[in-house]
Image (cartoon, rainbow, N blue to C red; front, top):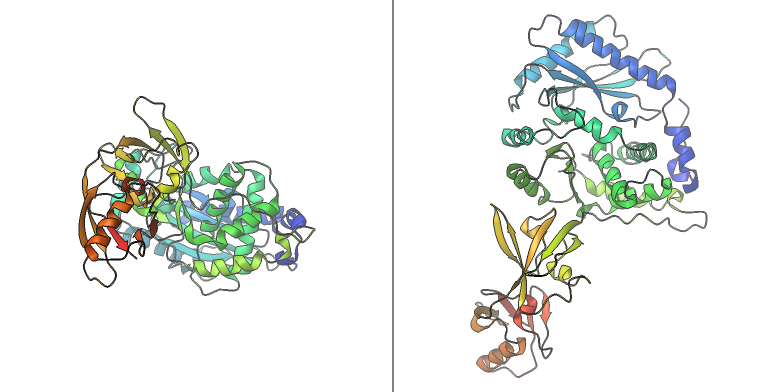
Length: 499
């Protein structure tokens, strides 16, 4: 195959042409990949499982050949074998292992499969075999991955969400992350296959960058799988263009590179298939979203955080390098602006008030609640005697602290909160003094002013007036502004610091 053009030397306005010339597979490549799949399918149907009482239920294509993002220079096909004896999840992989070893033993002796490489078991992909086939001495090798799967979805429509029990059983099985993902390949096909052609071109470009400019330079590193980058690209398109079928390729590519460069705050998921109305699924997804970021949940398998435990620092370095190349600059040598993409999906918050109309705003769940209260639609609603309260039926109830975020309470999806009048009462506060090992105790009214407590401290400690400030969670409490403790959401048992 002729040498590839250099992405980093391609002007931004030529990216579409670069994809068309360098990345789109030829008809010959597509035919050879299709022939490879047909060959493996014949092997499985007609020879490998011919004498097996409990064999396979069906065979499906997966990977880039399934979702239409195959590259010109990388022929590959993933073959998923659904074993018909497995109708429930099982963490015991012995049967799958036996079936794979049977395939591995028989494949080299099948006369219709010529020019096959050594067959390997990929330790990073559970229940899988990897090898290459080559039809002629001049054709390019085709990578083949065979994966075994459970027949969990049975005859469920491939475009419809499975019943919640499917995911409840998945969660309770307690398998390794991604262990059962091949069982949901039909849903993955439905999720990706219908994407617009332009987006699939962007997926090809990102995949090319991953293979040639990330994996090539870090061949032994434990990098995130290409699937993680594909999901981030889809997320960038969904939130950056509102699912537009047409967009500028250069802007899309820059947006993905910036998302990869600043990946430490990413926390995304798709609720299309696993219903968050089910309590078991909801609680599990909450736990997943609270893990160390970046968090990228597989749209079809909530147990699979696709980028967990990988070298995202290397992704950051290479993406930053890419953003300095000419493919990310316009004709005037100005950096191409990215789409407006948040690192986490905004959620709809409905504020309910007694005898008043509900108000709805969109909020980043990682923003402090104090910032949410300053939203233009809400700022005039609050008095110093009011606070926000959240109640989830059958689960929990909480007053929402201003210095916390909705994410701190495990809220990552649409929620209703209530504006509640705060009853005036005496509260117990603790004040840490400079040089003191234990804090001092004070009792004061929740609607008293900040300066009233400062006066008590100065009097008790014999301090000169006006020489100290009070801090609460890193925030300076203003004196002389007529602000009560309720303004800062200071409640019974909180600790203040005298500085």
